[in-house]
Image (cartoon, rainbow, N blue to C red):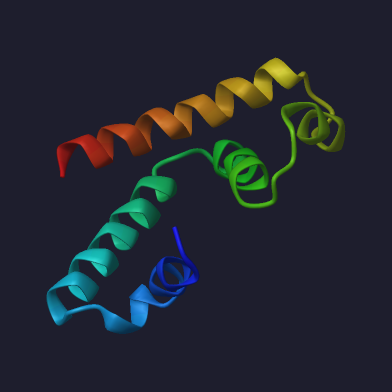
Length: 88
């Protein structure tokens, strides 16, 4: 892969067709709606893990729980998101 491929991937959002933009926004809306169905603690743990890159152990230390409780929360959200994406 050359630099051109990297550039195309990084800037592909600017070259979207109106249909691609619509479907991307619809998918993002569905993700937000799915996250809204999760408990606040599930959502918080998932976002700390997925977006902030914290480990289960780091989240557990912050929240005063076991890393297994964190894992269970993250997995519950993951399953909901996988179900959402498989339905589309």
